[in-house]
Image (cartoon, rainbow over all chains, first blue to last red; front, side):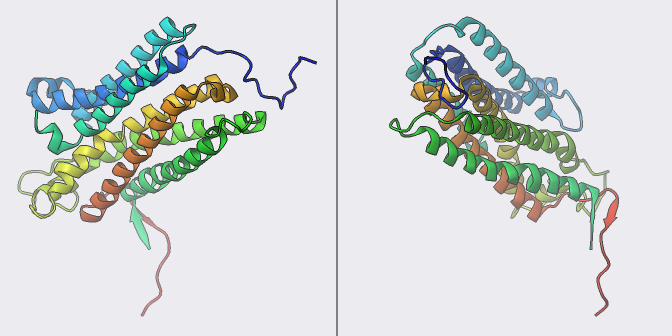
Length: 115
Length: 190
């Protein structure tokens, strides 16, 4: 009687929130990295030239490649550390959301130009 | 009726991947809210779980295709530098915009924001798809994870909207053109 059929929910199985927390926080950090690398490339000529990974696309190629690499690396590390843990998800998602909002704001040129 | 290969790629990028993502995103938000918002409702069925997994994965693919075609196919045409002394800048959209103060902000604000903010979309939706793959129906018992995912999907919709709006306005003020001409059909004589 306790066996579940295919259509029954499997919500009884306890999955720790660690993998979800790792994914959410890494996404926030990855988004923030897009803004930070773009800001650095905009403010420093040497960083700007370093960010030119592919000339036709210019610094955007390096900014986004570095941000994506940082995002995936952070996600991998956090997932390895948190995959079997339960974390204070409210705090993690609040930090991730703040980073995401900062990323949206910092990529907006009039705000970016304040720095 | 004809268009160029460059404008065809712009259509594939914007009206294909980008607009389809925006449509899919609003559908995903409705579905995720409907399926998970009420604590009184039972967890979703296996078929719905499978459908949402495929749906979110397709959205992630669309988002990646949109940013990759934008950054690596269309953007190089947009930012092409004209040879010295070029008077007609129609084939050089960035330079065309910057040459006219009344429309230059479409580049200095529009494109400068669009080219970066658009990348938050694939990051957010890939995260959402992976989390949904991992938790599936169990997301019902993780309201804080679910709410975080929903918040990121909402912001991805906003970012895709920003990118889509500026993409459309940029293409209106300084369209990406050039490449081979594709002739579709001849019009009748008047």
